[in-house]
Figure 1 (cartoon, rainbow, N blue to C red):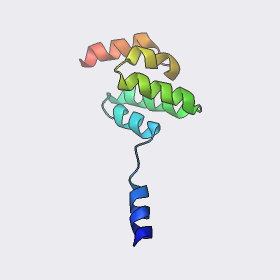
Figure 2 (cartoon, rainbow, N blue to C red):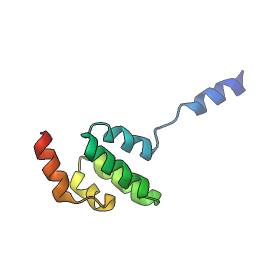
Figure 3 (tube, rainbow, N blue to C red):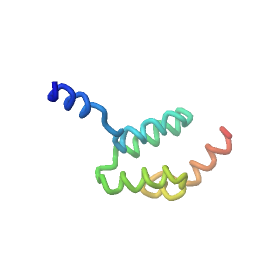
Figure 4 (tube, rainbow, N blue to C red):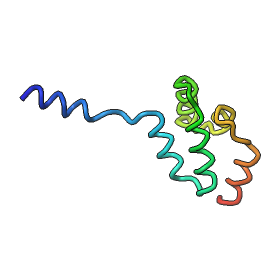
Length: 83
């Protein structure tokens, strides 16, 4: 019984940073979503990924863009078109 409870509790995990970013990307228009997910896929450093997640959780998109290697001008232009 205890083993079953433990295994079920282990299955409930906090989403990983990568999953959180994928969920965030689902809110973007398709072209921005593809670019964002490609940038995330190119990130190999968990530290860098953590910084991006922290910036986005604070709503600091400008702080996350340099780590994503996304041109801020292109991102702003896209936000203006869709917003």
